[in-house]
Image (cartoon, rainbow over the protein chains, first blue to last red):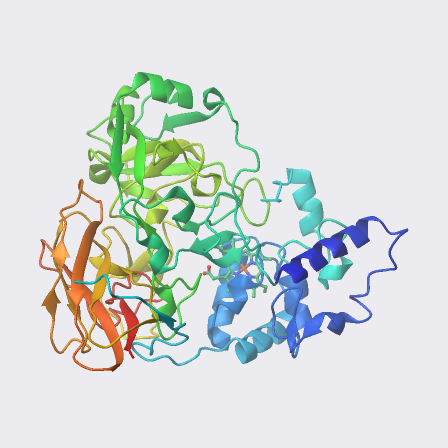
Length: 132
Length: 405
């Protein structure tokens, strides 16, 4: 994780000192940031139209708000319209449909039921000799 | 935070960009929000906090880090809707708080230094919980940060009573209906004209003894991310009522209509709805009191203990005002409950400590569940309470995993 941040910082520097660095490689080879199917710059699943989300959704907040979320196409559309009405998100025009399609495909609701099992428990040994 | 609020002109320039790919943005702009790995530590905060989002900053505290009776400042969760002021003044004399609104005939401005000099100081331990704490468990999923159990804490707050300040400002008690706040944080879009959040409480809540304009947490200046240098604190109400980086208080002659008071924010359906229902804004009611709840903070989930030994269980329980009267635990998924020891609150709206010594009949996998009851006879549910579109008010029993092996 730390490496990614350092990398992101280096990237910023690369943009500002162009004599030292070659032209930024994102437009010509955006997938160079993909590791194990994840876009390491954002944390987005690097499938489908993820570059549209990267380009249009991260001016105000990081992708963490997106990657935490699961929603149907209708749910994603509702959130986008709420951001347009209340939060200053611009009209996405013909990009709205592919953006919603990407979100509804890769960030769909995951069925959890009324209470899910306590998953991902990290077991450790607790010394209880002191207990009475 | 590395973010500087933009000037109006910069904002317009930036928002006018044809944003197709982030990489086409000019230097300094392209990486806004582009970080897969949230900054692993937040200034002034414990490294063990779980960062849900780095921009805006939202971080919660794993249950076992909340074991202290008085929550340390570095362990209190952060729920920011916008961007904290980049450089708040170090000198409290420079921070101003304006008191205005329909029920204040003549607006009055106090510096923080004046507040500290003119009014009596009070310290209370007040439980602050995000209305969306526990959102993660709702299905169908609810919008917003997916909090698990850690958007809660109970530090000691020092400040002046909101009531004393409103009285000094000459507010009209016969006209006052609601108190709203404004703060000096910046909207995520950078637009200086957009209000991030402006909520508040009914006047009756504002006038309570424990309703504070606070500048200190556990005797120290507030952490920047929790509102430095000045904020409101209302125990027992959703934490979003307790405005941070406080710059203005308005005493309204009507329901406050600030940002995130209306629509579906911090509201739940006025009558119960089926999971996944679409609810019209007009049928959503403002959340006031938070529900009765408890949290097991010791041991950390995942403890494996030797057969024949006992487990010391501990945690906190709270409610929106009426004290918690009973906490029980179960090791058999609620088939049977045993009472816990329970301490009284140090003051109204402070959480209470519970403890128990737990024995297990045989080796194997167990879950220890805790369940609190308050003086109004409200009991925590074992399953999720009523589904609501934004995922508020989840007070289902907390549980930890324990193995006897």
